Image: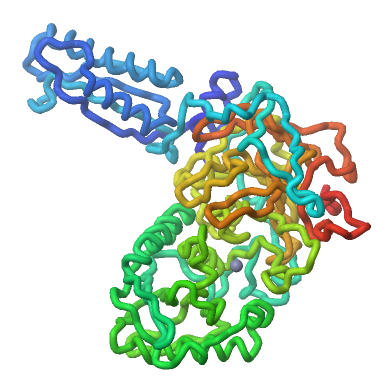
Length: 614
Ligand SMILES: [Zn+2]
């Protein structure tokens, strides 16, 4: 049982008089001295006001704000009154900025001359929340095209596919008041669903997994600091003229920054770019690999030999110039726009290590230049996606529909355009996989079961925030199924879509389903459709119109999930239970599953993915 109570929750708890047994909150204090006051002054200067404001803003989960006016111990009581007034002014301003703060001012003597006449701020936040920020009052700014009325989509983009165009980035609706916030921290163990998929059994510990137990495969890349080397290369007959640093330094820093953010600092990258391009010794024709070969027969002899040949030739051409000592990952980058091969990726243990003059190359990605340098794409996002497989995270797209295997009339994957592990349109990593990988921080999730469920609201912060604020509510439905409610806001890692992905995302996790077959499925409210969404410069892509904006709600498995308020940096969401709901009731939500993904299938079911649950 987690002992700590999330800051915002304990405020609500006190207000509503429901004090839980474990409410003894531990605090962490941060201190800051305000700039000096001029002789006799008791009001705050602009600089001092900005210092108080900063202390409030960087400690927005703070509960106690103490202002201490300090006098030199030999000074008179009149000085005592003056420094007390200074302290009072500082605390009054802090209270004005955040009325939820409990403020207290006082005066104290000191023997340290440098503190004489100054004001010391002491800010106490619940342990685990210190230094984390949130936007207190700024509401999310919806575009003027978005009224409080529901705006059903009417412009068919492609009739055959039932895809609609959107007129407005969002579709908020009129709001209802939030429920009382009565749930604080919960044990997470009941939500650690056991994976029962056939893949888990078939591939044992080597499998890419969606459920617990966490992978303990020897090939699971351990967390920690990784040395990454990037080497750009040419063929004698296909060359690129851009310098490796010019082409790749931005990609390298985004790669490192992404990994640090979404692993919550548990995986950090030290990336080095080899400054010169390396020229392979053999012509490009010797390296050809068809996309079909790469996608449908990755472990066939033809493809394994092509991968093997590439790495041996690469080492032959580069070993004299490149230092391969102590590299955890090597990223080779071909000339942009080459179409010789699709990808040459090294997967231990599928491919063995390749010996160099220094240490062997064990992990490496070599993307196809033509595909990965297409407009709107980013090489770093490919590096991240593939690296996540080294941590045993699964693909969320239909892996039997990858590129050339695609059959006509198949709807997009169950998380299409919503997650890094679906592809690289949206670059967020969902909180379930972050938790499964062992990266989430304490306080980022709550787990609700039949026994501890209570109707409650939550303030959810975007999964991209690398801090201990609450990110996800998990609603356990069965031993292999749960619903997750999480918040998203666009970050520097994401494209700017036409249909906004700033909102609340609800998805269903089913750990009886294997990697690449729909173990994680986005759930949209009743009435939503597929929309044509622009994701970067790369053009339009089709995805389910999934996000809940302010006022929107969704019903599934007897739960009602409603967004009561959207702030710039958080969402207030209420979750309640419908006592009249019974299992087997007709689905009142929309999703894409393996059972309903074929558009022209006459037996296509509604989105009934709760067949076995509850
Ligand atoms: Zn993948």
